[in-house]
Image (cartoon, rainbow, N blue to C red; front, side, top):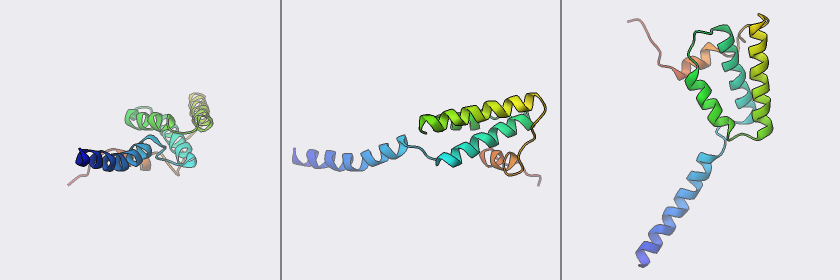
Length: 110
């Protein structure tokens, strides 16, 4: 009985901080906003690129961010999409393919 109590206590001490870390945001607010902008610009400049995995990660992160930051990111993504639809936007040089490439396996010629 005593061993079970000690084991349960140790497991709780280890598991609770891990669960809290997993439930919290993995990006700072500015990193999140920049990532949303980059994916939106990449989608605007290359509509044929599959951004499903990146968008899924950002949507998951949005649920962990403060509501105001998530709303700001959504407004920014919609603004970029609207500007792209009217032909007013080009992909930012600071992001886009370089970040998206990190998420996908590289194909190299041998």
